[in-house]
Length: 91
Image (tube, rainbow, N blue to C red; front, side):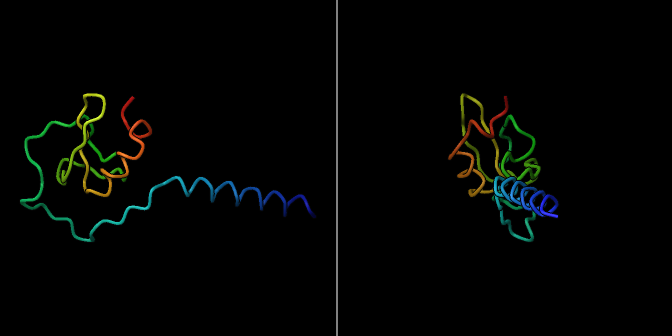
């Protein structure tokens, strides 16, 4: 009887610890294309490395890491990237 309870507890703990690694990004509910979007900038990523949103339509900010320019959908995602760029940069 103790084995299923212990196994369930261990599984729950491991799932919760994995879930904490994913950044909780809160975007505006309506992110339509506007003049604020950056145009004609070449970036090495097709999607935001933090929230995985496609950046082609919503490129708001960039950051340079190891001579590569990375695009982001928001300043929040750029700030998260700058905290630990080696974690998110293309290998």
